[in-house]
Length: 127
Image (cartoon, rainbow, N blue to C red):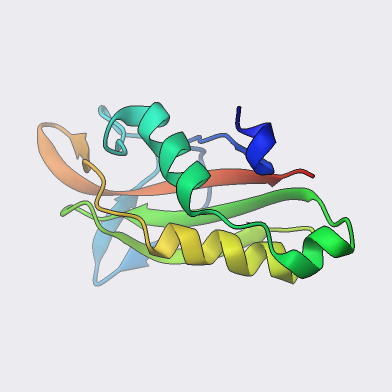
């Protein structure tokens, strides 16, 4: 199903160098991970609906996986969106655009409190 739309997606919460903002800790591992509305199925649906394979990338037959890192804040907003690996700037730009436009997530929790959590999202562009 996802391949028919020109991409596949996987999500993971990996250990990567900790980010800091305003002195508040950003977690990589938490008791309860952040969750997109309706879980992974909801995330897949959002990406299938909103991700657009760049025309020039299609014409040049550019494919590959874009790794996007971001923070899910205590209020569920997505911030600090950055590409950590990409085969092409056109694919990077589209991945960042879609991630920045995401609706709020259910925030991660540690010891019963909402916390900031770093999240890595690989998005696979495949023709």
